[in-house]
Image (tube, rainbow, N blue to C red; front, side, top):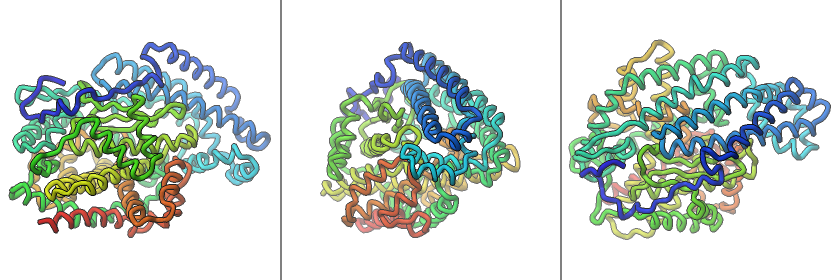
Length: 604
C-alpha cells in the first residue's frame, strides 16, 4: 500500500497480521515440478482419451455402458487436474495482478489448458447425441451411471444450441485470444491503476473503500479521483464492452439462442420466466425499499439531496465500531455455531489451514470471492479486510460460500459446481445468521439503528443494485444490436437505471455517467448479476422458515448444500414447500427488507 493519506481511517491496530493464503495444497510455487508433471499427464491422458473414445461414444452406450462410465470418470479426473492448475494460477494472479511473472504464468497456464482441452471437445458433443431414454434405462440398473444422469441432463439442455465439432473446437481454441484476452485487458488495466489523494497513493479498492467513510469530504475527494479516471479510461472500456457485447450477439446468432440472456439462464438451470418474475417483482419494490430508505438516510445525514458518493456513507453513532481480525473471526464462527455446530466446524478450517487471504496489499484484486478450487482440494476465500462492520458481513458471506463448496464436493468434479442462482444461498444465509446475532446482542438504540441500516444497504446492494445492473446489461444488448455504442450511450443507459433504482433522494451529476466501466461482472460473466438477487430472495424465504422453527430445517438445509449442482431449484425447494416460479415467492425477500426499513422509520 502506498504512503498513507489523511483521508483514511486508521485501522492499523485492527488489520495487523492478517492471514494470507497457504497455496501448498495446490502447488508449492510457479516452479514446482509437480505442475510440469501434471501438464505432461494431462497431454498424454487427453491424447489417449481422444484416440480411445472419439466417434465411439454412441457405440459405448449401446454395447458397453460400463465403458461409458469409465470414460466419464476419466474425463472427470482430467477436468479435476485442469481445475487445480487453473485455480493456482488464478489465485496467484489475484494476490498481485501487477506482478509480471504471475501475469505471464497465468497466461501460459490458460494457453496450455486451452490447447490440451481442445482434444476433449468431442466428448461433450457426442454425449449430447445419446438417446436419454436409453441412458435412463441403463442407469436404472447401473449405480455409477445413475450418478452422472443429472450432469448429462444439464448437458442436454445445450444440445439444440451446440454447433459442429469443427466450429466448437475453433471457438474453444480461439478463447484465449478473444473473450479471455478482453477480460484480461480489463483486469490488468484496473490492477495497474494508482490513485493519488492528498499526497497518498492507493488502489481502486482503497478508493472505493474511502467512499464508505464517515468523512464526507473524503468521500467527495474519492469520487472526484474516480470520476476523473473513469472519464479518462471511458473510451477503452467502451471498446471492451462494445466488443464483448457484439461477440455475445454473434455467438447467440450462431447458436440460435432466443435471447442474449439465454446462455446464462441455461448455465444457471433456471427458466427465463422465473428470472423475469424476480426482475419484475424487484423493480416493483424499488419505491418501498430503496427510494423509501434513501429519503430517510437523507434526513439522517442532514442533507437536502444525496450525492452518489453518499450512497454507502455509514450511519454513524457515538463510538463507531471497528473490528480486529480476531473479533471478526469469532463473531462469524459464533453466528455459524448458533445455527449448527457442523457449520462452525467447517468454517473454522478456513482459519486454521490458511485458506483465507484477507490483507489489503498492492496489486491485489478488489472485492471478495470464494474459489471452490478442484474437487480433490478445498476452497479458498479472498477479501480485503479493513475492520469495517461490512467486512464482518463479507467474511460471513464468503465463508458461507466456502461451507457450501466443501459440502458439495461429495458430488464429484462434474456435479459439485452449483448454478450461480443457488451459489449465493449459503453465503447470504451466513450473512443473515451473523446479522441476527449482532442485532440480538445490541441494546443501544443508535447502534441498533446503524446495524439495521447497514443490513438494509447490503440488501439494497444485493437486490436492487444487482437487478439495476441486470437491466443495464439487458438494455445495452438491445441497443448494441442496432449500432456501435458510444461512451455517451453507455452513460445514458447507466443513468436511466440508476435513477429508476435509487430514486428521488439523489442528485445525478454528469460525473456519475461513467461508473459502469469498473463493474467486472459485465465483462467476465454477462448477466451474472441477477444471481445475487435470486440468492437473496431465496434465502429470505428460507430464513423466514428457519425463524419459525420449520420442521427438520437444519437437515433439509444441509441436504440442499450437499446436492451441489445435482438438482434443479424447484426440487431443492420442495422440502420447504417453496416455489420460485411464483411471483409471491420473490415478494417474501422484499418483505424482509421492507420490514427492516419500517423498523428504521419506527425509530424516528
